[in-house]
Every structure is written in C-alpha cells, then in structure tokens.
Image (cartoon, rainbow, N blue to C red; front, side):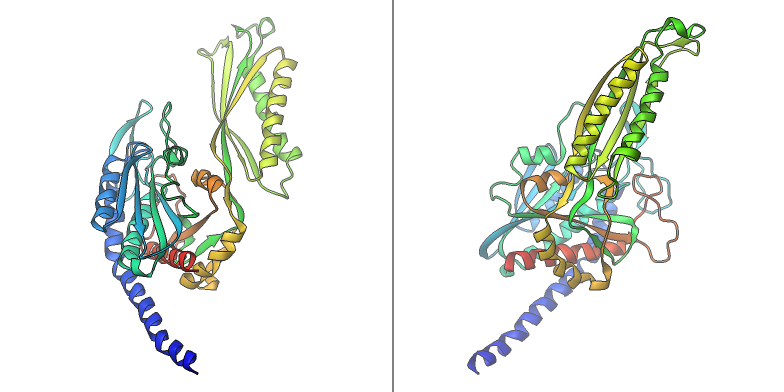
Amino acid sequence: MKYILTLLLLLPCVVFSQANIDKDIANVEEKLIDWRHYFHQNPELSNREYKTAEKIAEHLENLGLDVETGIAKTGVIGILKGDQPGKVIALRADIDALPVTERNNLPFKSEVRTTFLNTETGVMHACGHDTHIAILMATAEILAKHKDKIKGTVKFIFQPAEEGPPPGEEGGAKLMIKEGALENPKVDAIFGLHINSETPVGTIKYKTEGIMASVERFVITVKGKQTHGSQPWSGVDPIMISAKIIDGLQTIISREAKLTDEAAVITVGKITAGTRFNIIPESAELIGTVRTLDPKMREMIINRMREMSKSIAEAYGGEVEISFQNNTSITYNDPELTAQILPSLQKVASKEKVELMKATTGGEDFSYFQEKVPGVYFFLGGMSPGTTEPYPHHTPDFRIDDSGMLLGVRAFTQITFDYLNN
C-alpha cells in the first residue's frame, strides 16, 4: 500500500515533466522555421559550409554544450552531458547544399551563385538539408533545457559533404569517422532522419535492415582503333562497342539479379567520345552508377560487369578498362535497435502515421556511421496537405512544408529520452 501511494505521488511529477517538454518543443517552432529559412537563403556546397558551421557552433555554444569545429573540414559536433551517467547516443544532420539553381517564388529563395566544376550555377538546398540542420539545432535546445532528465550523453553531429566532396578531396561521414566523430566519448548508437517531399506532413516512414542502397560510381574506358568514318572496316569502333556494353549491362539486372530479393540498378549517365562527325575515335568513356541493397548481389553485379565489358570489347576487337568507386554503403537499420525505437516514433506520430516502407535505391553516407555502430535512419514527411504533384529532391522546384519539421524534433527528442533512460 505504501508503495502504491508513493507511485501515485510521483506520477503527477512525471506527467508534468512530459508536459513541460511538449510545451518547450511547441514553443521552439518559430526559431526552427527561422533557422531553416536562413540556411535555405544561404546555402553552401560540400566542404565549403563555412558560414553554416559558424551559425551552428554559435548556437551550440550558447546552449552550454562542449563544441568541436573543423571536423572533416567544416563539420561541427556538440556534446551534451546529462546529469546522470549512462550510454552515448549520436544524432546526425547533414549540412551541405547542391549546385542547383532555385526556380520558385519563395520569400526565402536562394539567390546564391557559384562556379562548380567550371560551370556557373546557382546553389540550393534542393534535398532538405536546411531542414535537417534546423531540426537538430532545435533538438539540441530542447535536450539542453532538460539535461537533468538525461541519463548519459548526447552527441549532435552536423556533417558536411553528404552529397559528396569535390573531386580530389576527402569529406563526408567517412572523414568524420576518420577524425574521431564516434569517439571521445564512444558512441553506442546513432540516429538520423531525412525529410521527404513526397511523404505527407505528420508521417514517418521506416524499414528494418537495408533502407537505402549502396552507391558505386563506375568508369568504363573502351579502347578501339581510330579511322575515317567512311572506312569503319579499317578501324575498331569504340562507340559501337560502348552501345553493346550498355545493352549487355542491363541484362545483368533483367536476367541475373534476383530482384524478388532486393532491387538493383545499373545506369550509364554519361558517354564521351569523338571530336568530328566523320572520325571513328580511338576511345570512348562511359560513366555511371550501380545501386544495390544486398552485399552479395553487389559483389555479383560488379564481377559480372567486369567480365561482360571485357568479353564484349574483345569480341569486336577492342579493349576495356573498368574501375569502381564506392560512394556509400548500404544504409542498414539495425533490426534490434529499430524495434527498440519504433514505440518512440509511434508515441510522437501515432501508430497510424508510422509506416513501414520499401527500400529506396537512393544512397546515404550515413551508412558509414552504421558500419561502426548500430544505427537507425528514417524518413520524415514534408509534403503539404493537398499536394497532388510534389517536386522531387535535387530539382530546381523542390520544396518542403515548414510545418513538417516539428515532428522531427519530437522524434529525435523522444528517441533520446527513451534510449538513454531505458
């Protein structure tokens, strides 16, 4: 009886505490939107996020966090120590923009211009990373205000160059890991989110195991024999061989990959060859990408691409060189950790609004963090109610509804409390 009375006396305090947290989250929305608009108007490309990093670091310092800057060139890490000892959780946001010229009438539209790979272009947060920054900044403010309720430590990782560093440079999650982002203190689990323009506001989508694909960049150089365009029999045509290779590569997907297990894609995105209409050139270059969601399938496809390209080139008298560059691994959600935090997501969004999704062939270098520690990555709805034709990511017309961000703050906050205090 004494125990029951004690529990009843404590219960109002717990409810009151949660009510305070909910109120603080609701009150941070105005700041959240202001931050997002600032970053959207002032986008910076991968490994060049200098002003972005300065604003993030200033905010974290004002919250009283231990702040590290210059990680992986422009990355920022904030460390919040709870009032009680415990595990270490990491929350990650990517901070870079894209070389895309914005095409809309938003009052906070980006007018930034730059030169990227010798081409003049606009700069735009065309993938929603501006919302990710704002969400994690707001989460840091809420958790710092309630650190007395935290058992353990929270690391806020603001990562540059998720879209890939410029040619010849290191960057992104790989470099952050190399420079100790998951150490001192050592991270036990990491969580990330991505807003989505085609998912309704208020919805969260998740998947156990592979949720996003590994991304390989490949280059195939076909070597032939140059000759006059009027006398193809006196040379070896690398353009014709390239066409045969492209056709052959697609049969790996359509006839050899077990697509009932996982999706896979081979895409040739660029072909370069020749100088004149009447010259069969000496060589041709094919550049493309491979997307896979299963390690064994990835190995099979890469091996078959090597074999097939070589065989086709030799059959027509040519030679071939092929190389692969891994851009991301499979974004793999740890099954046990996913099951553990699923109730947290359902608590903030409702069971009906937390949906199991199919894997996507997009890629994410958050996957490199997941190779080192258990992690979960999920998608957050950013599509306005009533939208019938949402604009895809990485396009000039891409847009996100500001009202979708607050659920991201609630999700990160709930995951943190539940994971550390469990």
